[in-house]
Amino acid sequence: MDVKQLHTPCYVIDRDRLEENLRVLRGVMDHTGCQILLAQKAFSCYAVYPLISQYLCGATASGLFEARLCHEEMPGRENHVFSPAFREEDMPEILSICDHIVFNSIRQLELFGVRAKEAGLQVGLRINPQISTQPAEHAIYDPCAPGSRLGVTLDEFRKAPANLVALLDGLHFHTLCEQNSDDLETTLNGFEEQFREWLPQMKWVNFGGGHHITRADYDIPRLERCIRRMQEQYGLEVYLEPGEAVARNPGYIGRLPHARCD
Ligand SMILES: *Cc1c(COP(=O)(O)O)cnc(C)c1O
Image (tube, rainbow, N blue to C red; front, side, top):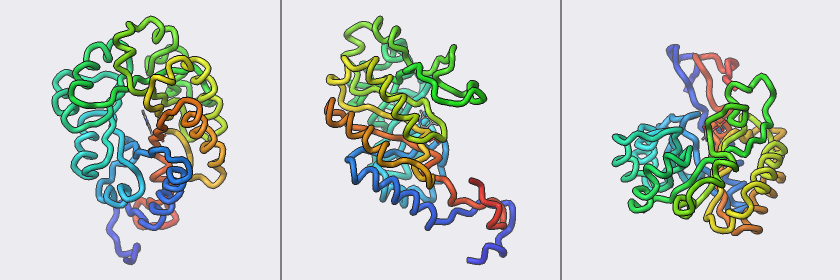
């Protein structure tokens, strides 16, 4: 293909570069036995979902439409969904196509948790470990910033009725953005300290996204130590759901290869 012949505007994806990223992610899965999902919010180019499915174990969605995309374009792979608030009218279809659902609040767990379990889904709850690792300029999208309503704090979790906590298969946190594994480790240490007593009763923990795993200076061995600690100390399965790390570098906008969008 001659890139100079393409009409603009267009977005060109270099499959070899994409596959380089996927190989790095697959390496982490193979070394540790963790599960890595594509966060579709960052990259929902379903033309390459068949390729992505060869390396990763599924995808995560931020609502019904992304969940439907995974269901249709990555058939047979894991289909996870998290939303700050699910709507009643979306629930029947979400429950019929997803296999993991993560709620953002005790109230949402109370509203939909039993139904999700009865439909055969694994149920998770997003935690706010209140450990901010992002620079101050990011406060507006830092889920650990004061006033954040993303995730349940330890105080709120302690007040949750036992029958609701008993519904949980896993805990989820997503607090990073384009960060290295030292910040993951800081977050995980705080998460572990706060939620230790409930970890043995869970099946899995999801470290969210924001891990820049495919960047040259990313410390993969430290990430793998974090994963193994959860596996070995608590018998947990570990999920990661990077978006940007999957799609870093393979794209060109327009017809100029030097206009890389990384
Ligand atoms: C945005 C998001 C991700 C992916 O984040 P990246 O920075 O693209 O890796 C993963 N999980 C959740 C809940 C998100 O909101």
